[in-house]
Image (tube, rainbow, N blue to C red; front, side, top):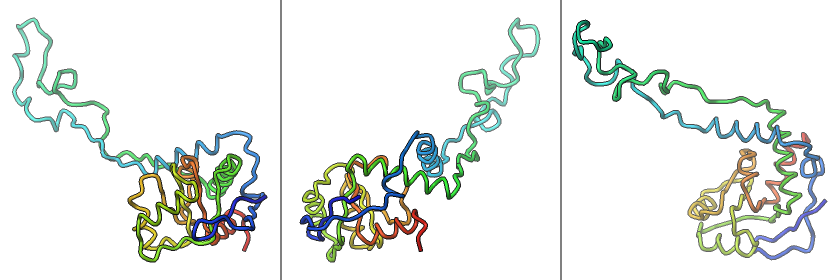
Length: 212
């Protein structure tokens, strides 16, 4: 199986790149593992910032609202009781919750193969010989992406994430530059176009294919 290949200047090459069937042509019978890997990525990147105040942390409420007996009303010891407006929160987030999830290495690799296979079946993958940006200019990088036809949510996979490439792509909202060794299901499923360099393709096939 082969996909379109382009030169470093964006011109279409005469020969097409061959993809491994064990990685890019997997039969995806269901999406359960993909969803699990997708949720795991989001959970592990979640910031645990939500914190509420319990009745002991809310300011005020030191004085008993009214005397214990004789008023005909329910007894209360503090206006910061959780059932009062402005009172403390019961069973709210404390900032110490652990939202991380674990996925085995084997499952991660299978999920990546499935995501790459789905992307290949939708003709989202294109291979570029080299991706070099000596000056790190955003305009030149944008022109190259336009020439490749990658104008919407493009995932660019490289083997070496150089500072020049980062500087050239970081201001492009529709471009996401990723190192091959940090490839994940979330980026693959959300990409409309996937541009991968020849060296990165070899790294991915070595990693997911189990070859030495």
